[in-house]
Length: 343
Image (cartoon, rainbow, N blue to C red; front, top):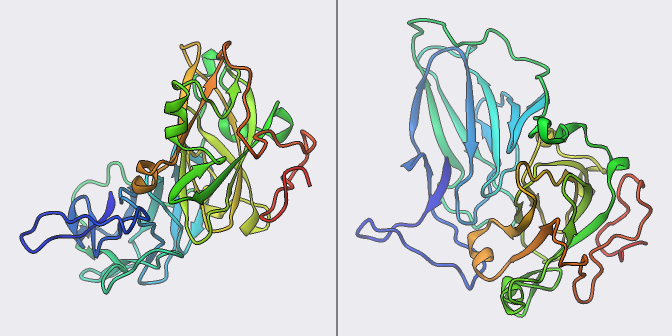
């Protein structure tokens, strides 16, 4: 668990949200320990990495220049293992990685460093995350793997007995609706389709971004129109398959090859996701969409959608259509920053 913090002189936690923009600490912690050193044997290690910062995003890399191997994302394993020199990770995103320590000598130190991303506030030592110290191998090899895999079983099959589909097998032609979530900074507040959670409250919690049907497949595009900010947007209930990023030639980044529920919307980025609204044993309900920069969520970047709500006739937001009017099976999505929906 990677996080950052600011400490007062007496050791207590400090807090400054910089005018509701975010909090960036000057101390990087792993599992609550500042810049720790972990002893490792010359073997392949598997790590589950969660970013638990309030605001900061990270781009981990190894001091040796050797790759990480991405084997899992938020919601499950990746069908294909990807070797990357670094990856981008925002608050609440989870990535599962392999690091191969077999080539290193006993006593060698390998640093996990942070290359950072645009619009973080960086300090003298926020480019460091932790160190690994290689120690002599000993003991049983039980549970160890002898080689980096190239493929894995699948990308997860949520409740197949209840009609759920394997997330990573979703295709654009399965979608029955296309919608757009536009993220902005307006009058000192963070909005999604020009709305905030205050608007939802004012409606008696009846205001919904969309009313989807149980087990339906939809295609949602998140567009970041907030200027010099990034947003890890979390959609409750679902795991989704990223099929397009306008900043990567119309493809997901190499580390995004598994099921996701938090979607990093970088500066002027649009990311398109396929998802199935599998409600499991429940008939449906209302679920949130919010930014996982906790300062943004507090001020007041959250809306809701419903699944199977017969009282809600698929309402739309004020000025922008939430329904994308482009042809249903067009791919890749046609939206790019600066273009209106449907052009």
